[in-house]
Length: 284
Image (cartoon, rainbow, N blue to C red; front, side):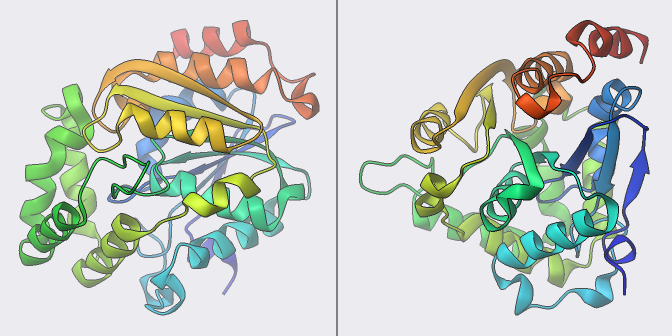
């Protein structure tokens, strides 16, 4: 089956530069609306659902292939091969950002930039590294999810969405969980929460923007600092927001940070101006 069917790919916009969006755990491509409304008028947008999420082809979920994030990274490269031959900018949230990073390490020629929103190479504390959780904390979190998969989404929504938890987006987050197969969701959660890709950070050669919420209960500020130090060509933007999804709770600040980053990429030097994208966001 073609990658675009497997990953339920949608393309919007018709600009000279392609932005590819990869969502995080518990979400699907619909979570990007705040950003795509702003960028679609001047960029080409490629949206996808990770296999096992949203409206992807669940029959393609292989528990061995997706037992690591590399399976999703391979899918991402196959999607790119179908839709463009030019380098793209990958905008990923949380585990979607790490999947994008792994793809960029594997095929750096396919990427002109990485935007990583709320990323973490590891959630678990280690010597000289603060991920935010002890191993036992993560196991307890996974145990709660596995024992009451649907109820877990409602209990975790305030921490994930911050100030948006009680809004329409809060119910949409729960609804996304309801649409997903529970066994797949439990498996993806375990893979996402226990993955450790700290060693790969130094292998990133793609210019990278790290966007971090100022008050993220899952990813402490130290993680952003660590990633900025380890990724050679990287900058860190901390936006004032609560929760793990600054692109939802503070979309304007995220758009400004992304657009400023895009203008620094040599291959995008002739792309849309910051003022153009800001105007689009005001009109959205």
